[in-house]
Amino acid sequence: AFLLPMNGVLLARQPASLRLFAEWELDDYANDSLYDIRRRERRALLTTLGLVFSQTLADNEKDGEVILHAIFQWTDADSNTRDRELGEPFSYEKTLAGVQLEWRF
Image 1 (cartoon, helix red, strand yellow):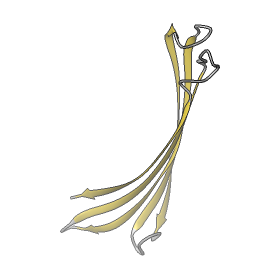
Image 2 (cartoon, helix red, strand yellow; image 1 turned 135 degrees about the horizontal axis):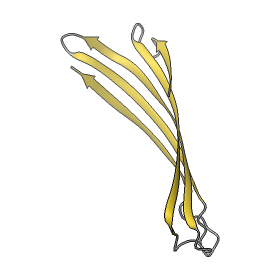
Image 3 (cartoon, helix red, strand yellow; image 1 turned 45 degrees about the vertical axis):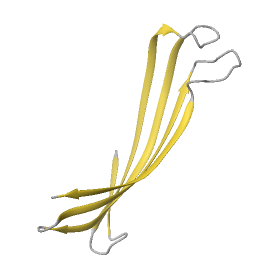
């Protein structure tokens, strides 16, 4: 993960940050795949890229700290499995986006 600190992006004098991350996962299954036209062992490579923007909205001793997080994540799953129609049933792309409100007290 890579963290890029910023100040006052949404609110002046409040800390903000941008976190970038990348993850790779290699899956190697031991059994032959019944879906695969050649009955090969299934292998998959998952690549995930994302970013999280965080901005402190409030920070005081009485009410605690409130942080807004904007989250974006993209995943690409690539598998060697091919079905009879030469489709790729275990290969896909997925995009997630969301907002999270964190309250620390």
